[in-house]
Amino acid sequence: MKYNRQAEIISIISENQIETQEELSECLRQRGFMVTQATISRDIREMKLVKVAGGGKYVYALPQTEECGISQKARNLLVETVENVDRANNIAVVKTYAGMAQGAAAAIDSMGRSDIVGSVAGDDTIIIVMRTNDAAQSLCDELCEIVNGGR
Image 1 (cartoon, one colour):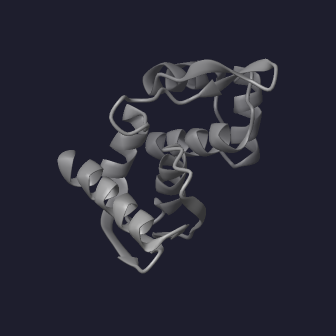
Image 2 (cartoon, rainbow, N blue to C red):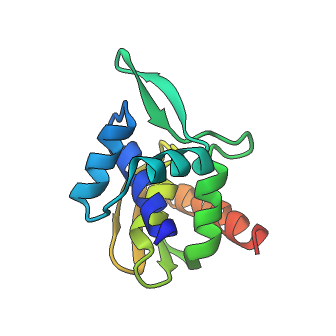
C-alpha cells in the first residue's frame, strides 16, 4: 500500500503544482487513498520531496540525483516494479509487476527526458513513444542500468 501511495504521490506532483500537504492529501483522496496528515508528512520526508519555485509559487518536486536526473525514490520504485525493458524502433516497452505500471511510468516521467513524446501505462505495461530509434535505445539502456544495478 505504501509503495502504491508513494507512486501515486510521484504521479500527482509530476502532473500538478502542489503547494501544500493539504492539496496533496486531497488529490490522494480523490484517487482513493484515505490518508492522514501524519502519513503525508512521513511520505514527504521518506521520499525527500523538496519545494521548488514553479509558476510564481513553491511546489513539491522530487529531488534529482546527479547521474541521470531521477530521484532515489523513483529509482527504488523502478528497481522494485520493473520486470523487463524492450523496444521496437522508437517505442520502448516496459513490463512491470501487476498493478505497478502507473507508478513506474510516473517515475520514468520524473526523469525529465525531452526525447519522450508520450507514454501510456496500463496495469503491467508501459508504452513509451520516443522521438527517434536511438532515443528509445538510450532510454532502454538507462532503465536496464537502473533496474539491474539495483538488484
